[in-house]
Image (tube, rainbow, N blue to C red; front, side, top):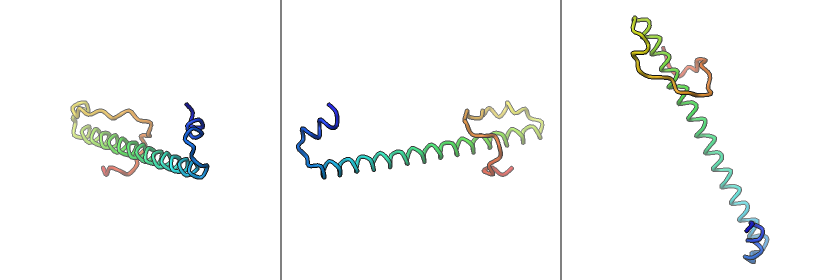
Length: 89
């Protein structure tokens, strides 16, 4: 059953239907905004983690310790490896 059929069978007036439609659209927009913010926060966190791993690896090399001994691998991401100023070396 389509939404149009459901509305026709319900006997609701057009104003009520439009109000319901508006509320649904607003809810979907709000959820999409939340998802967008979560995706940004995740990318930001992964970038910060990967930057920290790179800084620690560089510090270990300066002390003659192989970076493999850190035992932490950067996460796969689509963010760059350019410095973001999130970790002070």
